[in-house]
Image: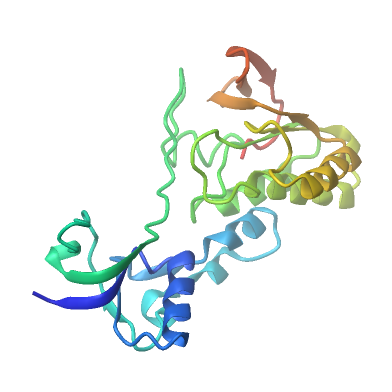
Length: 254
């Protein structure tokens, strides 16, 4: 039975690699990382890819190239942790553990829609920056949009970066401003939160940013379905749970 003093579950992502490197700098000599991926994706870059500020290829590296030296890499998937027996993947003994398994994005289908990549997502102006193959599609839809309505949404459930839906909205708005068509695009930002951001100082600034770009912000709201054929997004008021429809003419829905 193999044993390690510290085991980082899912330590091959950006958060895990940061912890791995920090532990090594602190002089920890027995650190193991459990992560099955052979490819590392720097996912924070995908927002910039969707906004046309970076190539998607820049977000990819072999996992072996980013793994800190001296860390034992167990290229397997963790299926569970038993804290009482202090055992993890393949019953590997451990003294301490860190859990940073990340978040696998899901796109559950709503009424009349199909969110599987290659069907609804990636076509007809509907995209997501949370997948490698779709971030470039977001940029294409932004470039192709010269007028109409663009809706950017944030789900109410767990999300990797709560600021990402706002960042892509601002990047898109700035591009349309540069192209001289910002006044022809009706931009909507749908947020499930009661404010623009959890920190008031930041929230106050973002209110002004949205206002400067002419973005209509829907707080405590969530997009619950997308109909790409009709170019329709259904937005629910989370306070009253009464859905309303917002039609999109030719804009992205990211």
